[in-house]
Image 1: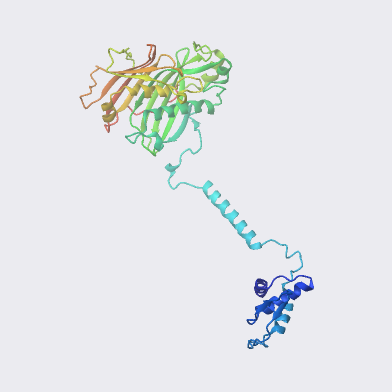
Image 2: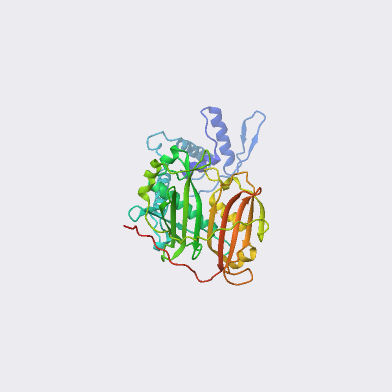
Length: 418
């Protein structure tokens, strides 16, 4: 095959005509032994015969006659082989390489799917939405604190904790099989255009988790009066069991068409009451009245706050977590730098729409917890209202110096009473 390739690089492919053979022979003669050719006027080739034959090299002397005979033999060798079944088979080495690549890729994918963490706390509740525990009355879900959920203090923000509370509440309804067409609404609620709205929220933070921590959130519901429902949360460190946050809230029903509060229909009560847990609130209710403040009594004011499209939920009103961010807009910066939020109480007065323009007011409380000049705890009164004066949320916040010892009673999952 090498000789054939070499010959084909020097000699043109023979043609069936006799003239072509003659031309080929002339070309061969011209290329051997330094023989020079000259082009005659008639187009024929003239050969200079005064040339010495090359010496013998491992065989008979190489001359013109030998060259012609060799050319004839090469013509026979260089002719293409007939097409057979063997010649038409694919290149087996390429096929083997492709199969090997496919097997290696499949093995890599399988190793990724079958990956196990070296430490049990590295991967908790992956790709899940939690589970029902304690006789089907408590919902539990784990969350890993992401890098984008922490603030300048390298700890999770209060908004992050609030989002975890809201997520577990919705997943509780979904896992229990009570999720209808609405956002957290049961099937009977969806038929009557009813939705849940929060009227009061109280949160105590004993310690904020940091990046990479895994928190375990437990939530359950109980009755609150004749036409309300209380939902409690207990947030703990999934590894140590330390209580991090406790929260309690009260919810009522509202017609999403008329935007008016509604009583709980008996059909809806029949859906939700089997999931009520008879227990005390996880947080002792702060019965102190939230005072009303105005522009004259406020120490700090932040104006022209407007919701963005992403601040709306599927019920077309501003998500209640967003209110906390607006309330903290008017908190004094020195307190934000030196203290951390330890407790917050909110009373929701009305909903806020997409086109609302709001004002955030903050007043330093005179309850004796401290003042801005002291290194101890500080308390503020808050009001979030529309620019024209209608109240949206009243609130109270308590702040402790950063890195202070945690306070409060360690919470426990309530036991169902007999």
